[in-house]
Structure formats: C-alpha cells, structure tokens
Image (cartoon, rainbow, N blue to C red; front, side):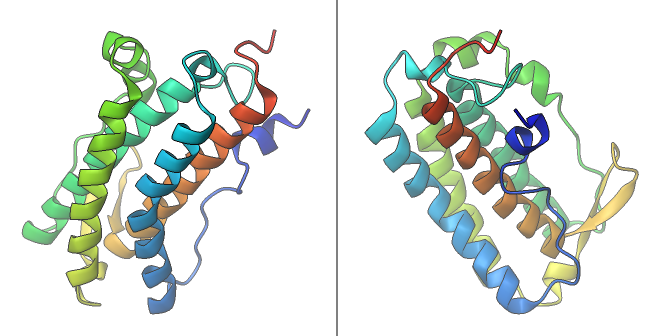
Length: 180
C-alpha cells in the first residue's frame, strides 16, 4: 500500500508558470465541485459510509466534507481580503483540530454541502469578474512565511477540491472505517 499515493491521489499541487487558460479551467473546477460532491454523496454515501477513511489515520468522509466547507469559506475570505486590501496577512486555522470538533461529528454533511454550494457560487462569481492584474494581487500566509498571489491560490483551491473528492472516492472504494 503506497501511503503517499493515498495521501495525494492526484499528486501534489505544483502549477509552474500559470497561464490564463489554466485559470479559466480552475474557475470551472471551483464552480463544479459542489455538484460533483453532491452527486457522489447522494449516490454512494449512507450513514455508515460517512465513517470510511481513504487511508490509515486519514479523515473519514464526514470530516472531509466538513473540511471542504471550512477550508473554502476561508478561501473566499482570503480572496476578498486580497482584492480589497494591500497584501493583507490572513489568519490561518488549525484544520486538524477543526476536523475533530463536535460540529463535525454531529451536524449532517448536508449543512456543509449547502455552504459549499453558496460559497462556490460567490467565489466563482468573484473569480470570473477578476482582471489579469487582480490575479497578481497577494496576501501573506504567516504559516508559509510568504505572499501568495491569487492566481496561485485559485489553482490551489481547484486542486484542493479535486484532491478531497478523490479521497472520498477512495474511501468509498475501500469501504472500511479502520485500517488497523
């Protein structure tokens, strides 16, 4: 079992030089994620399946869906901050701790699906209206110790959605809650 392949089923995000057509594809990915996720969840996920994991010590489907909502809400805020302020410093969050909070355990995943539908509609609208120059605007991520531009960030969140969608597909394929 290749743990690294399980962790990064579509590979790590490494865009190289970013071109306009790539950004357009990323916006399309961001637009489509809630529909793709909803179709997968409605089709293949029951209450038992929400506990399936995609790798040993990985998050289960329930955690992944709630994490996508948490993460992409933060992404939307980061875009809005970078578009309205000069290189703002964003506030990171402890995603591993967020993934184990009681709301993740108790609140139905449909709540996070609804968040993703709304956030992605808003984010896709913002991204679709941005000029080439606006994609070069930056924010500072204190954990990385550097400024990230919005073109890179669009790609990263396109990748992030596809990355976790594949995790969910893997968890459903393996149909096991524990890898012990």
